Amino acid sequence: MISPKELNPRGHPTTPIIDKNLLILLQRMNELRSIWAKPMIVTSGLRSEEKQQELIAQGKSTARVSKHLSGNACDILDKDGSLGKWCLDNASVLERIGLWCEHPDYTKGWVHFQIMPPLSGKRFFIP
Ligand SMILES: [Zn+2]
Image (cartoon, rainbow, N blue to C red; front, side, top):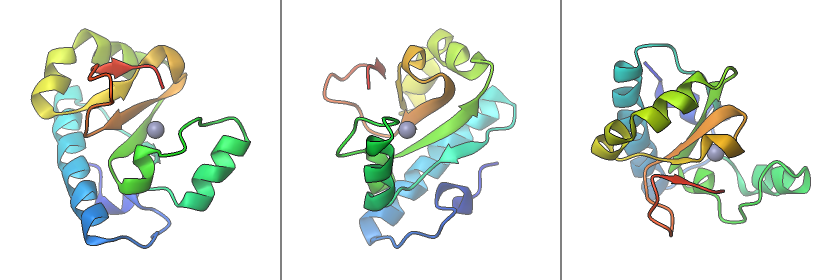
């Protein structure tokens, strides 16, 4: 099971809205984890504005308004790409749970999950 602390390991200050988002994210990710039936390691959960600016400066993110800032997204380690491939093959599971992903082709080494659709509405979207 993914623990609440894993989604906010640095204990960034939250608001009631962020807390609510993190709780929904936790529930949906653990539902996915129980179906995936393998460990999931969170590599990035809630981010501060400073951290996001740092990632943009390093070219590791292009999102000025990242879903990570509002507790709506987390990244899961996927060294061999097996989780990303499984998600592509099981889009109906993501649809039922209510999760959307950046297309795994664009996130080598991790899978980005979020609890709200992107503007395009696509289950797998280009970040
Ligand atoms: Zn992400």
